[in-house]
Amino acid sequence: MATTQPFDMVLFGATGDLVMRKILPALFEAHRAGSLHADGRIVALGRQHGTRDDYLAQVRDRALPHIKSAAADWDAFVARLAYLKLDADRDDDFRALAQCAGRRDGRVTVCYLATAPRLFSAICARLAAVGLNHADVRVVLEKPLGHDLSSSGKINAEVSQHFSESQIYRIDHYLGKESVQNLMAVRFGNVLFEPLWRREWVDHVQITIAEELGVEGRGDFYDRTGALRDMVQNHVLQLLCMVAMEPPPSLSADAVRDEKLKVLQALRPFGADDLQRCVVRGQYRAGVSEGQPVPGYRDEPNVARDSRTETFVALRADIVNWRWSGVPFYLRTGKRLPERLAEIVVSFRDVPLNLFQRPHSVQPTNRLVIRLQPDESISLHMLGKEPGEGMRLQPTVLNLDLHSASKRRRADAYERLLLDVIHGRLGLFMRRDELAAAWRWVEPILAAWDRDEAAPRPYVAGSWGPASSNALLSRGGASWHEEI
Ligand code: BG6
Image 1: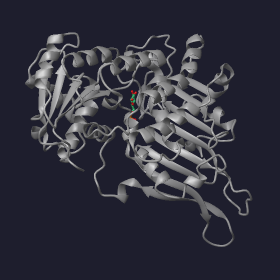
Image 2 (image 1 turned 90 degrees about the vertical axis):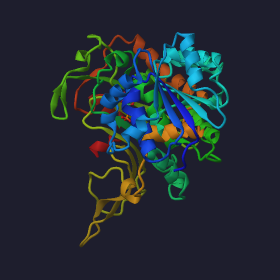
Image 3 (image 1 turned 45 degrees about the horizontal axis):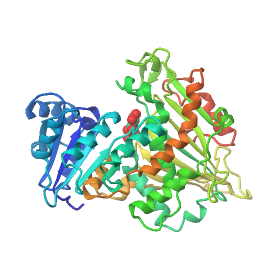
Image 4 (image 1 turned 90 degrees about the horizontal axis):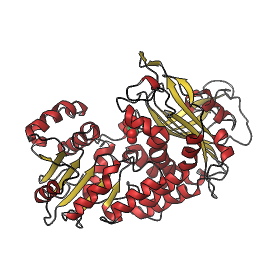
């Protein structure tokens, strides 16, 4: 991979969990792989007084354990790190930052806002006030970007008073996952699938992002957020766009984002009647996860005892356009499910005439399974002949194993996206109109849940969610992939 140009990576919220668990480990891996310019600095900003050594001690305790490879280059990596105290309300602190990360030819400044979104506008205004919004500055906005359509619109409007759209990188780390990119390669780099990738041949599509974890000490944030805002509005819908979009005319950032936007705009809006039929919200109760008893959601720290926040969502989405009309897209995500699994399953229609004996369990015949987690793979489920006498069919799988197919090291999603920001590649980041379209589509669900006094349907931690999630598919003659 080409080395970046010289850069300053300014981390707002540098003592937070995201920086410690994801961003610093990703930058370390990029450093180790030789992808970062020797003159690339990381400027960590924290609210506490303290020395660089204090900060490095925290980094060692909290970020180092998240690094997979042997940390032999650790000392060389931390030599890139500077620590600066910054209070987001203090102009003086921003002036000090501008001195530290001022404009220099050929150097890019990336301001990564890993903070609460309510600070985004104020931070951007203060950056602009000290000149840190010149053409070589890029600003990265972490999700959740707002709480609903109007708060997200407000943040975007305020940020765009100081930065042009081409300077704004709205991150969705699911787009940085290798198999998501590979889905594009498989769809648009081969002739094989594209003719079949439409309503005539596709029976339905499933997208699952399942987590074994509970809310992991983030009860306060999660209880205000819930699975629809935390996962569906962004990660799940972005995956849906990658499956459903039309071939773009080029791979330029806007060409791809234009096509994704069209998918979001073609999502059939939910009416009051659809919500009962098409959306399931669940909340976990005490159960067992990874062999250990775990508490129910309402007993997690910082969660209201009568909380109605959903930890599970399953829904049927419909895309109303020529390609997809009538094809259900079943979307599902949840915490405290039996395993960590993220996958997209495209189920094709059955053959028009069944000539062979075949196992009853094999329904439907052909499925393309794009697995993002825990392993990355693409596999095509088919039927072949059972060896021996007669013409009985048996299931067989063509496996495009992404790990053994290439010996090259695979960058993790955050590493890839951070390098894209430094290189100025916007293709894997969400444009403002995409974000608004995604909020617009989830809003009726949020509004209906707000009005609804009923609690979400309970499910036992360690199960696949409420039974009504299975009913959602069985009404359309389908079942979730793990049950096939
Ligand atoms: C984050 C959510 O965006 O994605 C978390 O806020 C979730 O709640 C996480 O756990 C899942 O990401 P990944 O890459 O571990 O599947």
